[in-house]
Length: 373
Figure 1 (cartoon, one colour):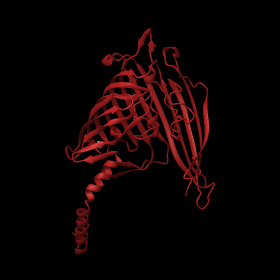
Figure 2 (cartoon, one colour):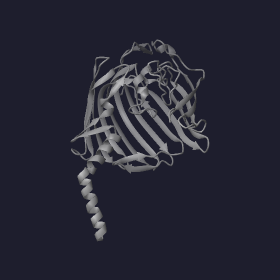
Figure 3 (cartoon, helix red, strand yellow):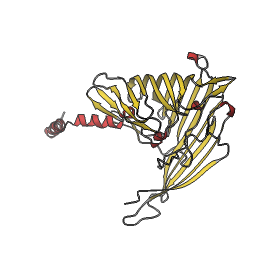
Figure 4 (spheres, helix red, strand yellow):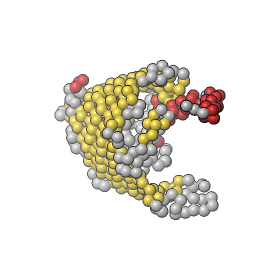
């Protein structure tokens, strides 16, 4: 039971909440944190509405999904857009059923006729988010007509899992032919089974804005991504195994600053077209002279092509420990990056300009942030 003071407090807070429309404000913050803007019973998906890259230019369109005002656990929607540089339409639709927000148990079914950057098929690469500046540099694209089903969930405390199946018809939008066993492929079909895992020991998860929010962990985070290509399934042209693994961590050392590293590697056991291989780890572009995290700053985006690779990205931020004045206190960071890769069946690819990094590729750099205090 509440005493008079407590009851009065609840009444006043409830009145203030209604006056300033506090619930609506919290809902808006929740949606913005998911890159969405609520409009009645629908959400505008900003990640599918605001799109720009070197191949398409600005994509004019919209992503629209139903929200909990219409269906509690089911969201149905899609996107369409027109590239102002490639003069072509892209579109897609999906249905997402959320069994449990706390456990992040979701089932997704999707169809899309879209562009995917060369070498970026399959999983959502952990290095890049919705609005990573690296996405701007995408200039070699595959046209992909794809249907997929995915099931994801969080289990065993520190594990996050995702399983899926997809089938796609892929057409390179660059001058390319792949030759395998005497057959030339300009367009090809690919069917994959995928299993992805994230393990973050000690990760702190809090419930905020009606969703799980990760506060990170001081321990290394492990990603493992596996794909099995199934030849002849849905007329698929290739059978293969592809596996990638990533370990990354950031930690502070007293009086020294913050150290970060990312170790990643991948392997494919059978010849595949360039679009399904590993590339895109470079971010050097004279038009966009920005530092792009976990990429090689002095390497062109598609300079190297690999079916096996190992990359190591390291950085140390001294913060304001090295130089400090009244108005000038820059954060000084040192970067050291290393990479190796190789490619079997190099004669199968009629792709101009690519190389293999079968010698160690290394670069070192100095970064200054917050120059003006």
